[in-house]
Amino acid sequence: MWHLAHRGHADAMIELADWFCGDDAAKDVGKPSEAFSAAGLYYRAYRKRNARAARNMAISCFNRSDMAGYRCWLTRAAKAGDTESARDLRYFETRLWHGAARRIGRLRPVQKRDGFL
Image (cartoon, rainbow, N blue to C red; front, side):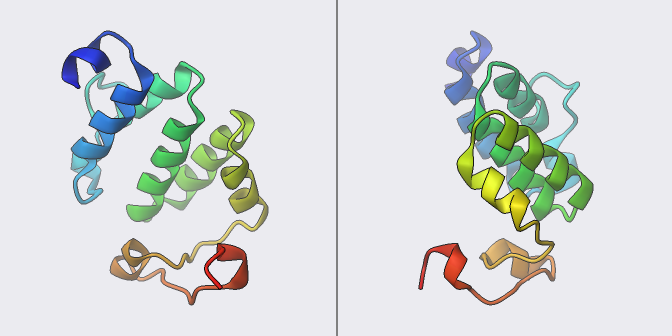
């Protein structure tokens, strides 16, 4: 995986970044300027027109309680063509239904638009 990411394969960069994120602490994610930090890998994959990288970075920002970063990366993912991110941006919420939201105190009940009911 490391060699594919080093050669610029966007999906390998995303998988490696997901692995590096760990518990989404700020020190685990790193900065976009650090080439092989999770944020750097997401950013480089996004620059290769990969909408999934922007979506994953948005979720990573949400899990760190960085709402400005969450909105910024959701916008980038929506512009890159991710329809789910465009929908989330339309309903922009600071509370979500998943387990990671419970950990940071931003849990809300599951709703119809989440697609589970």
